[in-house]
Length: 305
Image 1 (cartoon, one colour):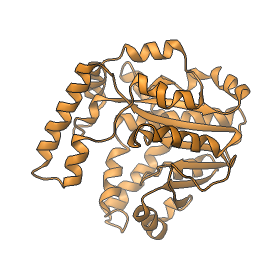
Image 2 (image 1 turned 45 degrees about the horizontal axis):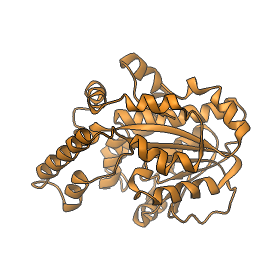
Image 3 (image 1 turned 120 degrees about the horizontal axis):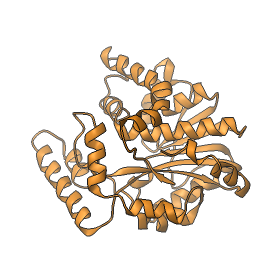
């Protein structure tokens, strides 16, 4: 477990290299779909996702996942069947299918999204199976997938139900399977929580003039980032995560909202504004097998900045 923040520009460039090498060509394809105003490229959520996957924190999260896949391949771990949970419109699963020669299922509970992509997805997005499903009640049997990925999804689920979701993800993993997980995280002091709430409220008011009611509510409430305490209470107790140590929790406690805000100022896009810029992401790798956990522990330097 590690907070996905880098110390400086050179470290950021080094850590996000997998995003540029593997993911950026697919982002460029997304851009061409939008420019050509194709059926998919004209969809509002596809356009929103195009901007979202290019943000600095998403580059960190996807790079984290790609680094895990590269490590698993180097260690000769089985990665043939992959489930990407809460896929949205992101081509992440397509990258995994094409680059790592995996059979990838992209699952989301948005029926409209799944139906739309099943019918209109361009050829470069058809290397995966687009499937409807509920993370809280997956239809797959026990011990079914080699790898399950869940990128920035669990913070959107109410506390308590996220523990249930995590148990479902572990249930469908094979005995030697791997869970690749990222979640939003933020410092937990009263002042910092109040600061984030006020920034969210101001952003919500600003969107009243131009945005939909849904956008206003999302700005004022939005996904609830984990704190160090809620990570332990709802996630860490439910799974064998590698790299979870006293030192890793102490390092989280030393990070402030100012540290995160400064990181976004250094790396953020000009059009990417608060409130999201006041929390970061935590990367976790979960396993069922203790022996495999030890092998991965020996290679943590490859996974975390």
